[in-house]
Each structure stands twice: as C-alpha cells, then as structure tokens.
Image (cartoon, rainbow, N blue to C red; front, side, top):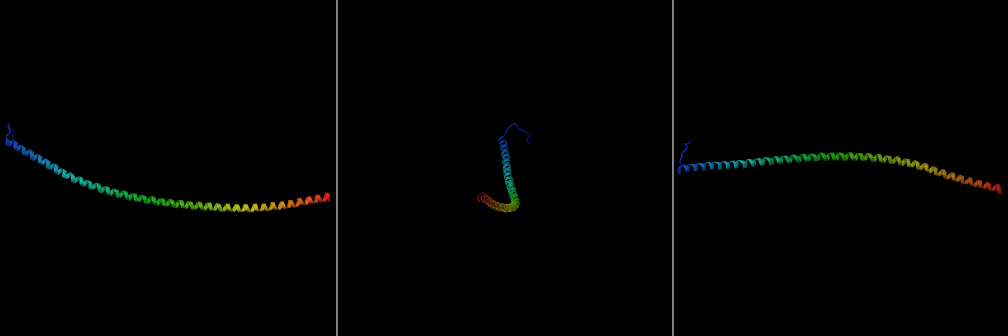
Amino acid sequence: MEPARATWSDERLDDLSRRMDDGFNRVDDDFRTLGIRMDASLADLSRRIDAQGEQLSRRIDAQGERLVGRIDAQGEHLVGRIDAQGEHLVGRIDAQGEALAQRLDTQSVRIDGLQRSIVQLSMMTGSGFVAVIASVILTRGG
C-alpha cells in the first residue's frame, strides 16, 4: 500500500476510478455467477422435489389400492357371513313352520273328532228325547 498523500492528481483519481470500476465489475460478475449457480441449484432442487412428489404420489396410490382391496375382501367376507346367517335363519324358520304345521294338523284332527262326537251326541240326545216324548205320550194318552 502506498502511503497516503495529501493531494490527489488527475492520474491518481483516474487510477482510483479504474480500480473502483474493476471492483464493481468483479462484484457484478460474482453476483451474476451466484445468480446462475442459484438458478441451477433451484432448478435441481425443483426437479428433486417433483421426483419425490411423484414417488410419494405413486406410494399413496399403491397404498390406496391395497386398502381398497382389503376393504373389498372384508366386504365379501362379511357378505358371505351374512348370507350364511340368513340361510341358517331361513332353515330355522322353515323347521319351526313345519313343526307348527304338524301341530295344527294334529289339532285339526282332534277338532274333527270332537265335532263328530258332538254330532253323535246330538243325534243320540235327539233320539233319546224323541223316545222320551213318545213314551210320555204313550203312557198318558194312550
């Protein structure tokens, strides 16, 4: 470094101006280079983020498909169980219906027998009543 001088000549001012211009040009170049490097880094980062986003999207889609498959399988399993329970219940209802029909048939036979007995009793009572009247008529009026 040069010792400080008390006076500034045109030559010294021109030299200072050149140095300042050179310094500013270097700073401008550094900023330009930095901008280019940042643009490249941001573009690379953007590509990496996009790639990771696509990979994540594929993984989410695959998980979704697996979940849908599992839900469908469980749904089919439940439908099968419900169908089996329905068939079991229909079988029980049919068996109870048959048992009830047999009981009704038995009751119907008993009711038919009772009706015949009532008819026979009525006929016997009616015949006996006629015989009693005939005997009363014969014994009194004769």
